[in-house]
Amino acid sequence: MSYKYIGSRGSGSMSWFLQRISGIVLVFVMVGHFILMHYNPEMGHSFNRVFERMQNPYYQMLQIAFVVLALYHGLQGVWNIYRDFKFPSWLNMAVLAILIVVGVGFGALGIANILHF
Amino acid sequence: MYQKSPTQEWTSNVVRYKKFSGSWAWLLHRITGLGLTAYILVHINTLASLQEGPEAFNAKMQVFMQPHWIFAAWILFGLVLYHTLNGIRIVIIDFGKGAKYHKQLLYGAVAIGLIVFLWMGYIMFFGHAEYDFLSMIVTSYN
Image (cartoon, rainbow over all chains, first blue to last red):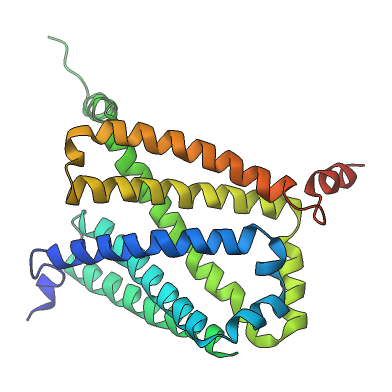
């Protein structure tokens, strides 16, 4: 497989579908996130409140899913926008590599923040 | 015979194209999406101070309790709100029969969005007795 065709395999229907599914899930988690963090500013801005919530392993699992889904949805979205333009294939390769590295790197940092408790 | 320059041609095409509400919805969805993707990276990086202990985290969070940062958070909420409501609209168009009434869906999303945006602003600025941001702003200018 030549790098010349990177990103052009398949119809893109699976990434379209996953973008919809992750988006629908994020709507629900995001509503909860904003109510929890902003209905009472103490909840999101105090270490002790965060510490208390993080004692619940199911809450931690939810947060990890939140980080992974949000990063996937966002970076996949950037890639979708990028693919609407025509750029040289070496740049496609570089941009895809950067998006993957950013996703894995920040995903690891986010999960480390959660599992620290 | 008068001929439009390439720039005039391009401008008139873009202006004509963007007259339709669906194109605005599409463009705004992309812009807010790019902004939110940039924000989540900053957000994860900021929360890394959780690993440095309570003092470091609370000190950092006190910064974001300043009124102008609350205002920035409110604007950020606006981006999330638009992206969410238009995202629901996209799902209805893709999975349902929304293509037939996509403009009405957009008007509905904007109407609901404005109400929720103002309501959230009220909660963020006036909803907490212990954080009276309005008087903080007033005293900061005295």
